[in-house]
Length: 270
Ligand code: COA
Figure 1 (cartoon, rainbow, N blue to C red):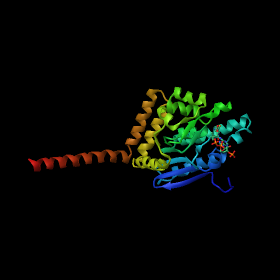
Figure 2 (cartoon, rainbow, N blue to C red):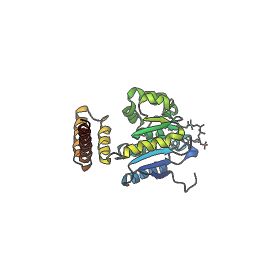
Figure 3 (cartoon, rainbow, N blue to C red):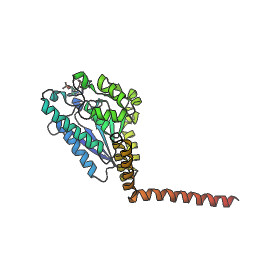
Figure 4 (cartoon, rainbow, N blue to C red):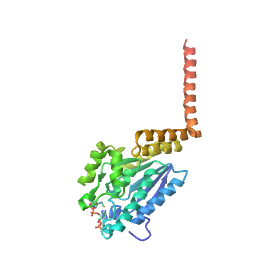
């Protein structure tokens, strides 16, 4: 890649911020610079009030991301590999926890760290040529950016084991049964599908979306009673916002207007 090429490109489409991993010649395999740039772009999108939804994709027609850069990994010692994994986990955890809804727009291979990145997003919209795998076991290693934990949280232990312990690549259609894919579309309709989903998500009150997402994210971590307490607390916080009161009030106003119009129609026809 030429020296001045940014590792991640950011473009704005109404309320949607699209981040594109920009290393197509290496199937968007992650470098530390790319991971740091992605983290910074996500922070930037979170700080921008005009951005309500963040989507991530890969450049080129072949890959979302083919995982961590193996050429670099091979030269690391144990301590450096540990630090590399911690950096990946930190970045993916902050994506998983971020206040705005996120969409992985998967346009080809989502392997290793690429699959982990997709699982850290709230929604996966995949093209028909997308495929997903944790190939690490075939390299005598294992996922290290949160893959074992995120895969279990997103698809359950049995399905997660099929990925992590087999190393097998599954096409998007096969993955539908695992439950982590929101939608599968033809490659030329991928961005439109992401825009449609983003428009829906952006139409809701951002605070309600944020509170609901936080409660959902705790579900796989807390025992049921603690999760319910957390949900009730989030509900109360959200309920105290002007947005929640306005949403409920608008529903009642619409209902009242409908009843009034039904009553006057009945009067005219009687
Ligand atoms: N790290 C570094 N480079 C990678 C890479 C990775 N994870 N995945 C792909 N690349 C590079 C290739 O080395 C190649 O570069 P080169 O042209 O300079 O040799 C380029 O991307 C294109 O990949 P190539 O293997 O030629 O494409 P392909 O279509 O034949 O195969 C894959 C695609 C994804 C099946 C194959 O590249 C692959 O298995 N990659 C490794 C995936 C992986 O194990 N990820 C987990 C890492 S922990």
